[in-house]
Image (cartoon, rainbow, N blue to C red; front, top):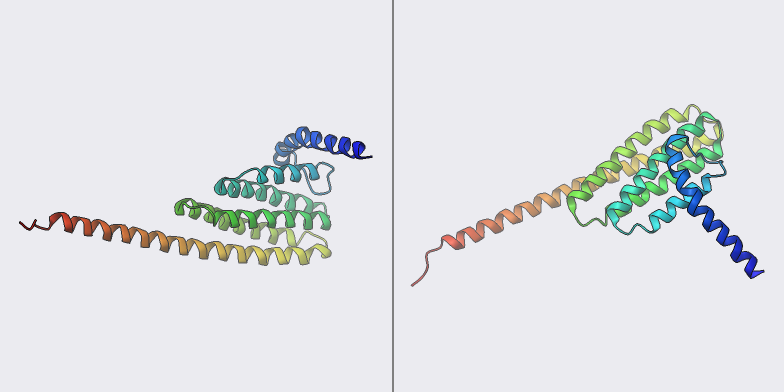
Length: 195
């Protein structure tokens, strides 16, 4: 019995290794949508890829790319009047945006962190436009999930904007400290030597 389970697991892992990468590229072109047999493999491969991406900046960028895919899926499945698929795509979108936001806060370089947060704010802005357009197309049972997602997106955008403002203030303060330090060093160099 244990051997059978091990064999099944091995087959699943081999399937992930060979099927998922093909589907990732297809997700952008043909569109692997929630409800598709391959959707599980597509999102599982993405999660594994994120798991093994240790650099916070790269992880945030990757999560944002996956969020864009989910946004395209939301539009596609809304046309099909599939409320469960819409909810799945929204949940996956939000988890990618949350991860991107979390990882951008771990980026030590303040300039890079600001760039990431700007991308997140832009993404949230696009998301609100897409969801507002989708809201009128979906069945009634999906409207509540989309309305909540629009509200969450607005909050995410406001939070990213707030963090950008704080980062800019920190950068400005650091620049001022550096200028002060340069001034102090210059004054010391110009002081006459006491004989």
